[in-house]
Length: 124
Image 1 (cartoon, one colour):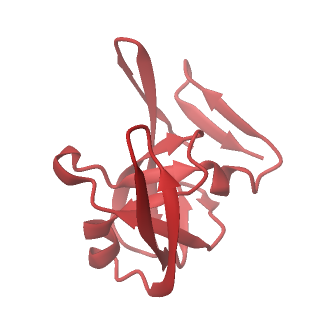
Image 2 (image 1 turned 60 degrees about the vertical axis):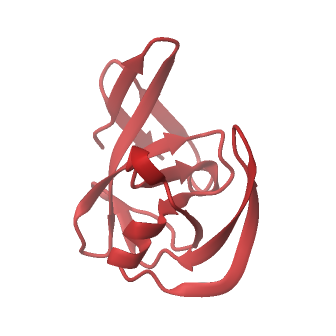
């Protein structure tokens, strides 16, 4: 599936097109350092993701937050259905990011290949 590599001084961000159910495609950043996938609170509301009565404590690069969990429902990357699960919600504020695809989802596959040069994410 297509992977967009965004290079900035000192780092590279990996972005993928992700869709909840049959909603619009949204850009999520692949975050292998995050143990929990997270969706922007505004996106969760627009996609009518079902809330749960659960929350999870998360450490970020600059703080510790508690994120309410929602049910992902059917979600996918181009050509690949992702496993349904509970995902965190957080207001991403002015950066306007749709979400993070964390290692909690990637670990469900036997292997993951990030092809930086070819711009592909391969899940096997």
